[in-house]
Image (cartoon, rainbow, N blue to C red):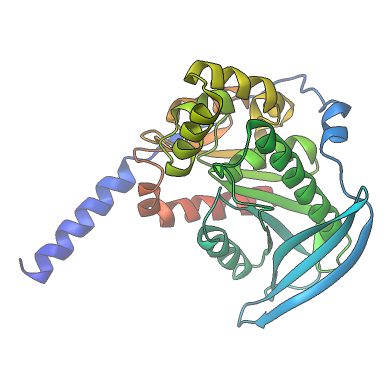
Length: 319
């Protein structure tokens, strides 16, 4: 096939892909938004005993610097080490708006780093808080998952508090961008950190008891099989146990979030974070602005450029 024909076909496919994106305008939102109850702040506290701050790596790029930090906190009788990457933009002067880029469930930080670099080149600082552990190891019990999530939420809140004290960070202009499990975390943080100005949530859902049992994510499927085999449980019994013990769920806090600060990206053919759960989150968030793409979890990558264009638009509007 001639190269010119291939180019035309490729252009046609791209145009058809872009046309198929659906934009949902935000609803008016609630007139009586409730404040997040104190019980949630107590459950996911900011760690206030910072023992040490270490820089383990520094890289100087054309448009930003990247620094690896280790923050050590007192954690009862033990210590809690939180690792993070901080991207300080060189664009602009004085304190800059800053994004918390929340990573996916497992694997490398390719997506998070791509977003952080993209933001830093455009005048935004960015931070990636490292996962305390890989999620859904087959050795993890249901109770383990709840404790891991609680610890991670306190890690993020503690890092946000630390960032607000840094001179290069504009503490009044901070946002969250989360992908997949990172979007779940983003919803929780939006309720716990109401001063956050923007929440850009890609492929996030709610109700872990449904999502875990219906997800086709390989790691989650293996975890479900391991739990059922080890405990001799049916899927329904496991679902009920998840419902009882994993209470750190966007389902619990979404009603406390101002939908005007939220932009949601929904993948309507997703089988890893089932599309139904993404729509349920959208409803619980009082129908914020959303973009709907006719793809699955990983094929979302073909929409990267249009997503970034929309992301840039909302960064300018909200931060």
